[in-house]
Structures are given as structure tokens and as C-alpha cells.
Image 1 (cartoon, rainbow, N blue to C red):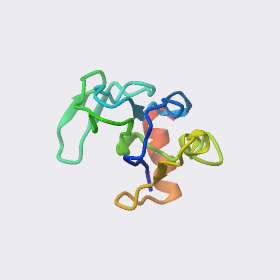
Image 2 (image 1 turned 30 degrees about the vertical axis):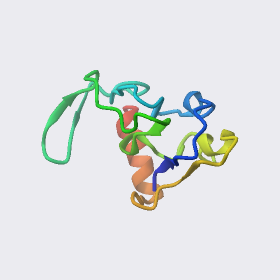
Image 3 (image 1 turned 90 degrees about the vertical axis):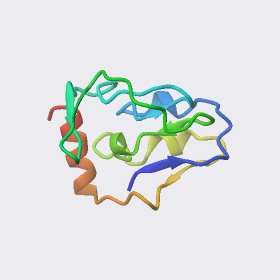
Length: 115
């Protein structure tokens, strides 16, 4: 599963620099697939090809957010999700709507980092 940030976020920003995939962004900030990864382009599930540097709409305008498709729960990097480890208010939690196996998370990591 991916990690999500709840609306109890105090916008402290402690989580953002800890993410090895650059999947965490400040509320209102656009994100890219290429940021923090080796992706030059991504083919989405519907077959659309997106440039890795193309800005994507923010997931949240109010709080820090995690891009689910870039989150690997730190698999292959750390033993636990680093965002959750450093969050002072425990608002980085498992996202029940996005469950993935360890194998799927490691495959996502390999795809994003050209391994």
C-alpha cells in the first residue's frame, strides 16, 4: 500500500526531504514524475505518455501530500516509511485505498530509478 497524509497535517515539512522517491509535495505545489527519479516519460494505465518533467496538478491545495503512484513505502531504501518515522503528529499513515504487495512496491522502485 502507499502512504497518505491526513488532514491533521500541520504543514511542518519534516516528511518531504525524507522521501527517496520525491513523492511528497507541499500543498498547492505541482509535481512531476521525473522529480527524484530517473523517469524521462511515463506511460499511464490508459496508454497516455507523459513527459517526466511535465507539471502535474497538486493532489492537495491545503496540506502536504503524497503522490500515490510514486510512493514505495521506502521499500528498497529503508525498513520503514521515513515520512511516518519523522512525522511529529503521526499523520503519515497507510492508505487503505491503495494496497500493493512488497513485490509491486519494489517493481515500482526499480521502474522509477532505472534499475
